[in-house]
Image (tube, rainbow, N blue to C red):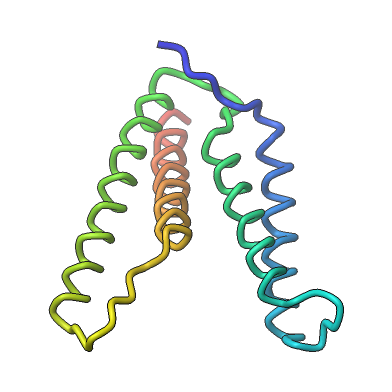
Length: 136
């Protein structure tokens, strides 16, 4: 099975854009309502979506040296990240039912997607590092 992944150089682009969006979000939060022409809420959502897209590009980019073992790690971490997302949704639902105060406030799709992608990136990088360490 061949996967259609983005080229490796797209990681650098996505990382740069992701870091810029994080710094911009921090700037928006610190300036708050001092931005007069554009609503800070709209800017916040724009840069949050840019951050999400950069995470997606990082997840779907090739490694410099793709191997069968790296593909197996990628598949395993994709399954684990999906399971993590399901657990987060179920626990969030259960906590809302148990501690119900008359209003349901579930996590947004954005929050869950970022959590799943970060989970995948962290554990994929960790397992890939351990694999590379055992080879050397």
